[in-house]
Image 1: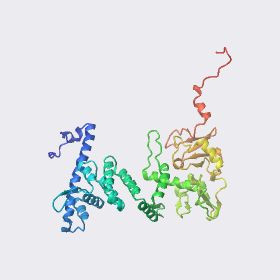
Image 2: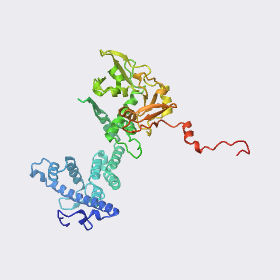
Image 3: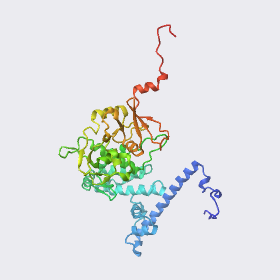
Image 4: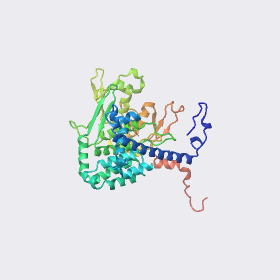
Length: 449
C-alpha cells in the first residue's frame, strides 16, 4: 500500500514505480494503458456484484423504488450511468441454474472482453442496445453471431464508431423496422425560434436524419475554422463558428433565385432608418445617432446598418424627419451580376490582406458608401468575406484604389504608421512585377554583348 505523505512532502519527494514524475514518456503512456485495463477489469467485477444485488432485490430493503435508483444513490452517479451499469450487469453476469450449475452469460463475448479489460462500459452498452433493437427473428437465430461481431470490433473501435456499426447491422437485418423509425423521426421533426428581450434570436430544432444530414453538409464547410494567419488560429469558439456558418447559409438562401416570392419579390430583410443618421454613419458618437428598425421590429445601430447596406439582400427604407419613407433602396446599390463577376476576378472571394477564401458568401463593399454618393462600379467596390467586412467597419479600416486595385489602410490601433497593405488576388501583371529580376533580359542582334 502506498504510504501516506506528509503535508510538507513535495512532488520531488515521490519515489518508486507509482510516481508519475519519475516516468519516461514511454513508461507514462504504458502505465496509463495499464491503469485503464485494470479499471475495466474492476468494473467487470463490480457488474457481477450489481447483478447479484439485483437477484436479491436489495433495493427493496431501502426507500429506493428500483435497483437503478438505489445504485445511483449508493455510488453518487448520474441516472444514465446507473441505468447502464444495471442493464449491462444483467447481460454479462455469470449465471447459475437452480441446481448450482454455472451457465454462460447472456452475452458471453462481451463478458469475456470486459473481464479482460479490452472494452469499457460504453462499449458494452452499445452492444446490449444493439442486440435489443434487433427484430424478433434475429434475436432468436442470430444473436450469437451479431454479439460476437460487435464484441470483436469493440476491441478496436471507439463506442461512437461501434454504435454506427450496430446501427448498420440493425438496418441490414430489419429494414422494415428501420424505415418505420425514419418515418417516426420525420413525424417528430420540429423547429422553433423566438426573439429574446435583448433582440437575439434563439433557435431550437430537432431534425430527422435526412434533413440533419443536409444541414451538416452545408454547415461544415461554412463553419470551418479560418486559416491561420502568422501562426494565429481562428479565435472563434465552435459555437461562434456555427453561428457564423448559419449566417452565411442564410445569405446563400437569400441570394438564391429559387426562394419563394411574395408579390413578385424575393424574401428581404428591411431596415428603416432616418437618412441623416445613416449618412452620418461613423462620424458621430453612438449616443448622437438614432437606431434603425429591422423587419423583426428590433432596433439596430446606424453603424451596423451602414455595414449591412453595403451589399446584401436587404431593403433599406430611408426615412425623413417625420419617419415617413423617403426612399426605398437604390436601384444600383447592390452590385449587379457583371460587376460581382469582375470583382471576384480581381479580388477573389475576399480582397482583405491575408484572407484565404474563408467560408461564406462574399459581400461587395463600397469604398465610398452608397449613401454618401458612392458609385456601384468596379472602381468603388471590393469583395470581402463576412468576417473581414465586419472587421473593416468595426475597426475603421480605410481603402484606397491604386492602379485599379484595392489597398487597405489599417487604423492606428493596428498599425501606428498606417502603412497601406495591398489586397486582392495577384494578377499576371503583378506577378511579372514581383518576378522582374528573374526574367532574362532580351537578347540583341548576334554579336551584341
